[in-house]
Image (cartoon, rainbow, N blue to C red; front, side, top):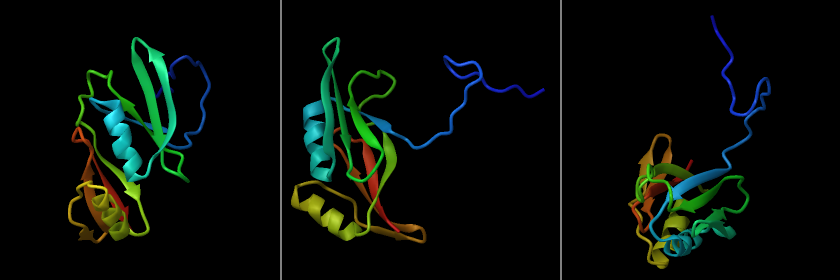
Length: 133
């Protein structure tokens, strides 16, 4: 017999999911990574002490609802272990040229039936790609 899943801290309450708000990116040096992601086009949203000597560093892309948090405290997420998230763009060549002008390496643009892609790695090896439809 089917049973409704129990939600943490709730008995019979369910809300519709809206969007992914924060993606944790594991890094070794938050300041170095913050500078890198600012070059990519992210803007600092929050930088605040959390306790235990940790700092919450959160950045966002303009006109989006998803942000990234540069984390150093998740043992199950070693730096460099996140890959595959995608930043949509209208002009991938312009994005890649702008990154290269700032000394950021990117893969060659790959044309596929589902769009153009170029991979980028942050200083710890976390990888993401730009995609143009």
